[in-house]
Amino acid sequence: MIFGAMIGSFLGLIAGIVPGVHSNTFSALIVSTSAFLLLYFSREDVMAMIITSAVAYTIANIIPATFLGVPSEDTAIAILPAHKMVLEGRGFEALSVSCLSSLFSVFISLPLFFTAVFVGSNYEFFKKATPLVLVSVAFFLIMSERGEEFEGTLSGWRKRLYALIVFLVSGTLGYIALKNSGLAEITPAGSVLLPLLTGLFGAPVLLFSIFTRSSRIPKQEIKLSFPEISTTIKGSLAGFFVSIFPGISSGVATVVSSLGERTDKGYIIAMSSANTANVIFCLFMLLAIGRTRSGSADALKSLNLIPNFQEIAILSLISGSIAFVFTIVIGSLIARKIDLIDGRKLSAVVFAFLAVVVLALTGSYGLAVFFSAIPIGLSTQFLGVKRINCMGGLMLPVTLWYLS
Image (cartoon, rainbow, N blue to C red; front, side):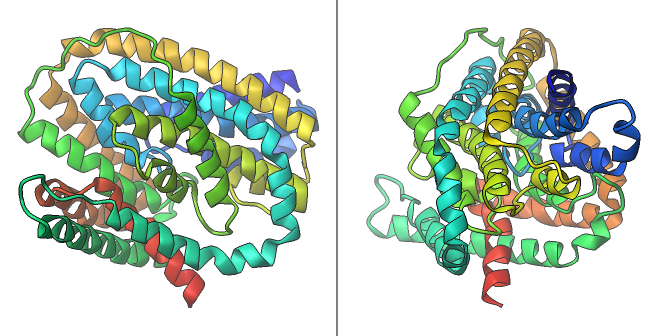
C-alpha cells in the first residue's frame, strides 16, 4: 500500500502542477487500465494511488494558481489574492500558507468521520435542502458587497446590484455550458469546467497583467508563513458542511469558506483547507453509505475498492506530507527565479498556452465557452465587485437542476 501511496502522490503532484489536468483524470485512467495495473500491483496499491492522488492534488494545485494565474474549480477564487501577493513579492507566502492549511485540514477532518455517518442516515433530508443552501449562499455572497466609504448609502446597494448581474450572467453561461458539456468531453481530461473557470477567473487576471501591470515581477521573499488556525478550522468545517449536500461541488465549498474574509491570505487559507476537507469527506461518504461525490470516490467504487477509516487516515497523512514537501520545494525554486522573467510576456505566453490547452482538451466548443467567459470575468474589475460572484457559473446551474 505504501508503494501505491508514493505513486499516487506523484500523480497528484503532476495533476496539480500541470494546467488543465485534474486528479480525476488520473482516476479515470487508473480505472481504464486497472486490468493491466492489477497484474503488477496489489488491489491495496491501486486503491492507494487513487486516494493519494486526490489529496496531493488539492495541495499542489496552488502552484499554477499563484504563479501562472491558472485556476481549477478548487482554486478559482484564490487566483486574484494569490496573484496580488506575487506582485507584492509575497508569492511564496501565498503558496506556503496554502500548503500548510491543506495539511492541517487533514488532521482537522479525520475526527469528523461521524458527520458522514449522520449524513448517510439522513440523506434524503439533506438532498431536499440543497437548493435552499445554494440560494442562501448566493444571497450572502451578493449581500457581502460593500459600497465605497464616501459614496453615500446607496453605494452598497449599487454594488450588490452589479454583483447580482455578474452572478446571473455567469450563471446563464454556466447553465448553457454545462447543459452541452458533452461537446467538450473530447478527451479523458476534457471538462467544460476548464474553459468556463479559466475564462471567468484566470484569463482576466492575465489580461490585466498584460495591459495594465508593470512588466517587472518583484523579487519574492522566501519566507515560510503559517496560516491562522481559526481560519483553517473555519475553512475545513465549511468544506465539510457544503459537501454534505448532494450535487454541491468543491467550488461552492470554497465560496462558503471565504465568506467574510477580508485579507488575501485569509481567502487562500479558507480555500485550501476547504478543498482538502472536501476530498476527505467524499471518501468518508463512500465508506459510510456507499455514495460517490467525486471522481476519485467513483473510481474506487467502480473497482470495488472501498477503503476503511484507518486506510483513509494513513493515506491522507502520507499523501499530504509528501505533497506539502514537494510543493514547497518546487514553489521556492519558482519564486527564486520568477523575478527574472518579464511579467507581461509571461502573462501573454500563459494566456496563449491556456487557449491552446482549452482547444486541445475541449475542442472548439470549449474555446467558445472560454472566450465568452472572459468579458464576464473582466466586468468585475470595472464594476468594482468581487470576482467570486462569477461562481454563479456553477451555483446557478446546480440550483436550477435541483428545482427542475
